[in-house]
View 1 (cartoon, rainbow, N blue to C red):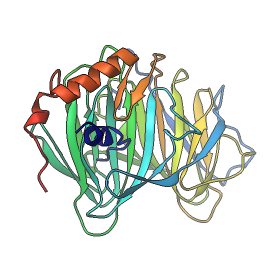
View 2 (view 1 turned 45 degrees about the vertical axis):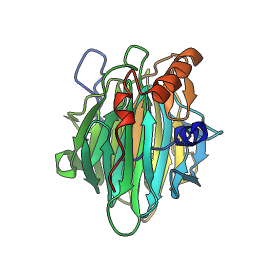
View 3 (view 1 turned 30 degrees about the horizontal axis):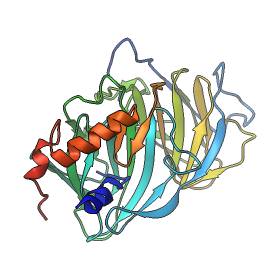
Length: 329
């Protein structure tokens, strides 16, 4: 029994903004075409450069599923407040059957296809291409996430840590359908604003840990200059194409790479290729707190992890429904 439970605990993946307030710094996007001088620099006082590149290499997770993991690998264990980033490609019957979480949030962004989510509190739903589910696991949840269509279902999965004061809150969901996510376009740059603000538009998604999450597509020859709050950590994940990030003297970066950005007040990107460049830009306010992780449980101390495992085994303190629930096919 213990070994079976432990095997469930070892799931590191679970597929599937910023609230207006004093702790949110507005950001603006400046887009120009490459018709202007390639030596032109951005207006940032402290432009962010790429300080680390991590290749997202395929690995197996869940039940027969394949993910490309970057954050969460040995090369990049975490990037406060981010714990994990996976790009998943899953075909039925593979997937992510019943497994628990505590102490953080999961964000699932569907790139192509559909996934169905169900949990032990009775919540069930399907997200499709372009949809987002932002789940706060809080004090405890057990759920499953399985492909809901024919062929390969693709998306991104991000884990965001919660501060110590929020780790034991009640679970909650924010779900946005594709048509509810703001989309803006200017000078060859298109952005979908999942969390945060760009081109003067702010996402309605509330993030307990202040976060920005944006999906950019640059046409050939386009460039952008996106402000990022100076105190935040940030990174780029390239979905397709290639681009130059940070400054024009950098070599091009290609798909399936995470680019960790250094300190500064904004990011510049140029698409000098003949094909579209698509990437997500993600940033968040660091928590600067200890992180102790045991698979899908993330707390601040080993004692809290030990308590979480005991709560899970004994179906208490947030896991009460575990003894009665099993997901339906």
